[in-house]
Amino acid sequence: MNNEEVENVLPLFEGAVETGRIKRKSLKNWLVKVYFERRSLVHSLNDTKTAVDDLNTLASVIVLIVIIIVWLLIMGFLTTQVLVFISSQLLLVVFMFGNTAKTVFEAIIFVFVMHPYDVGDRCVIDGVQMIVEEMNILTTVFLRYDNEKIFYPNSVLATKPISNFYRSPEMSDSVEFVVDVSTSIESIGALKAKLKAYLESKPQYWRPYHSVLVKDIENVNQMKMGLSVTHTINFQNHGDKSSRRSELVLELKKILEDLNIKYHLLPQEVHLSYVRSED
Image (cartoon, rainbow, N blue to C red):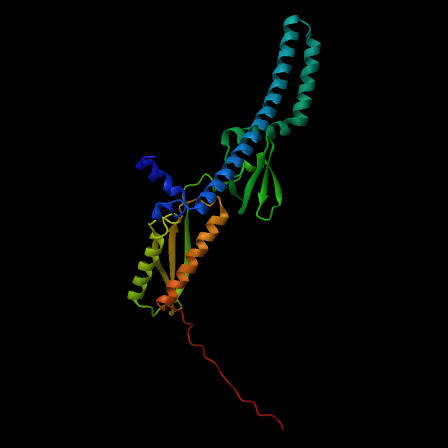
């Protein structure tokens, strides 16, 4: 491999950019990630093929009915009385199954035209994170965080906003914390410098651009601060996102302890009274 190919490959493995070597653990994690992505792709292709087959069957039935009617017209077998009878029956069918046909049409548009997700994508619907388990023409099966399967009609999903983590770019995260209002400007500057050094030491986890802001002063004794960072991944893999954020919060705690940055409650007024006993 030439130098350009090596530079493109190393960022795929955790810790390889800093050391120039690919560890066995990093290689294993990458292979597992690729396996899950390929498995999701296979499931997505299978479900898409099933949906296409169902749509093909439905279209074939409709075309066959049209061909039969046209053939009967050409052969002269359809008299006026027969046409009136067929029309009346068609009106009855439309009255009975018109809503079903509308639902099927909306579901087909949703699956094949809108297509907001594939099998394996992590989505948010009605504020609940779920993974797409199975796609059909009329319904989609989701797997919730507690492994409960939820069936949604596609015609209903077409009317809902859907957030897709898998198709999202690198996503941002934030951590809010409170420090004492007496914290010096120098200590806040040192806090920013240490956080910057930590983020730059983990290029496989975080992008270097970030912000540490003082949002507000509350109750005259506390400063509300916020740390905004950008992951090198989206939130499709919720476990990786959670573990990275956990490490960041623990590092923030360590930095606050090293810099002796604390938060103190306001003094509380306490009233004591002495009650003499009757004895």
